[in-house]
Each structure stands twice: as structure tokens, then as C-alpha cells.
Length: 138
Image (cartoon, rainbow, N blue to C red; front, top):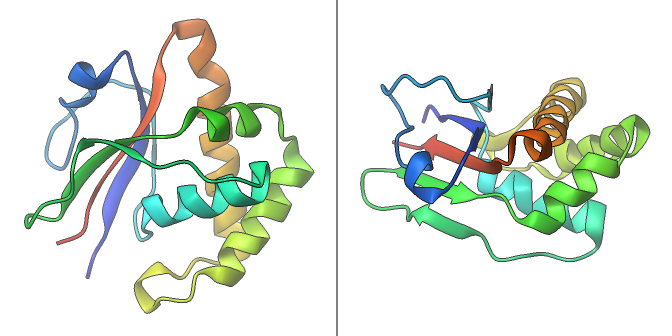
């Protein structure tokens, strides 16, 4: 199974509906191919906040394997203030916990992704945008 997806910034749910596989866009984005981002977001939030929020699906997962969800605000706030060492520690925990064959990620790649998503989160406030993620798991 090949997983493709990306975290991206959009103004609102209606705007977020314009993204997905084979749809070009000019939203600020970070690719997250090869992982299940909904599982990653859950693990990141638990590690960074000690709690977990339910994902708000803009496009619920259906038989076609496509979904779009809004990244929970508590996680966005935590990522924006976490600092590099805390993000790297979160990435190490996440990489160690990724136990499914299709969801394995090295600690270095996990840290790189988490740092890039955190930078995306940091840029959203000044632009009044929200963080979303889409992925396709055929």
C-alpha cells in the first residue's frame, strides 16, 4: 500500500475541500507520504499535551481511501511552542511506536517531518489559516 498526503494550511473547511491527490494547489504544505497522519497526529498530541482530541473530518474516510481532517487546535498550540528538543523527543516516541509495516518511520525522518509541520503551524497565525491534512490510502 502506498500512502500519499500532506499537511496544509487553508482558510476554512470549504477551501480545504479543494486539495487532494491529483489536485494542484498553492497552499503552504508539507508532504507526509508513507505514514498514517491521523495516527501520527494522535501520538503527537498525546505526547505534547497529555490529552487527545477527536479529529474533525472535513471529508470522512470512505471506500475510496481518501480523507481530509482538521488538525486539533490543542496540538497546533503545543507544536507552536514546543521547541526543537521537545519536538525531537516527540518524534523519537512516535517513531518507536509506529509498529505497522506500512507506518514505519525512522527517528530522523520523524523529527524532520515534525519540525517542518511545526514550522507550518508557526506560520498560520499571521495568515489567519487553519492546519489540515489530507491523505490517500488506496
